[in-house]
Amino acid sequence: MKFKRILAGLFSLCILGAAHGADLLDTVKSKKELVVGLEAAYSPFEFIDNGKIVGYDQDLFNWIMETGMPEVAIKNMDLPFQGILPGLAAKRFDVVITALTITKERADKFAFTLPMADATTALVKRKGETGVVHSPDIAGKTVGVQTGAAQLKVLQAYSDKLVAEGKPAVKIREYVTYDEAYADLAAGRTDAVAQSLPNLASLVKTRPDVYEIIYEPIGPKTFFAWAGRKDADSASLIAFLSEGMARAGKTGKMKELQMKWFGFPMEVPSDKVPEPAM
View 1: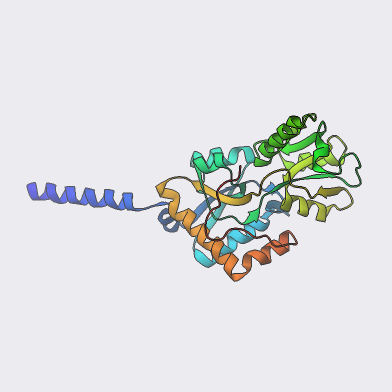
View 2: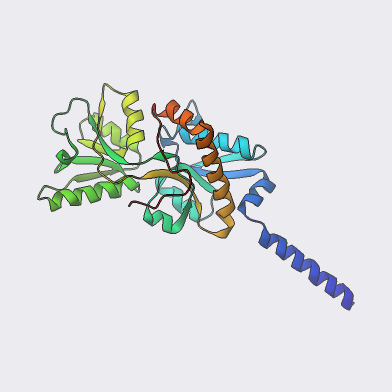
């Protein structure tokens, strides 16, 4: 009886040890499924075309998975941007594969992959609009931005800078999606929209008759990346995705996809996650 109890105890310890040793990447490989959170309303990073989620992030992510874990199926959960990081923290999905600006606040709570695109904030205005020619011209004007986006904080900081210079504050109007902000800009209900340069380049490429970029950044140099939970369990999955990102840069795949979706290449750090600039 005593020998049986010892065997049972050793068996229990083995089971606990195996459970403790397994991490999220092991779990994903075992289940053959990776659950992804994203916002498919952020063209050209991810958006819906003919009922399918497409875009730069999707192409890059699919390439990393096909070359690194081809046996794993992808389950996408498309959510409003404001619910993505709370959903990740609540473990509704394994990782966020959407364009997230690397910020200090987010980096304190979540683990970022290597970056895959520039996220520096600039402005877009209506084509030919003479009231807003340079970035400081938005003083006292109405500018649209997405609720919860890093660009909102950049715009708020820029407005504070203008006020410190003795100019009127920017009238900031928040939207659930950037598509709504662009629509209001086109209709003349706002004077500009604050967004990352890659997104604005894609917008103007699609509607050059309606929109025009002001090529004067209103914030610091920042980058987009994907994110996971900041815990030991998720570390291996983030490392796997970062390794794939580095491989995409080294082989030229990242540049190829940037040319496809943005029309220009972007230099991004490939050796480590950059320190947040904001």
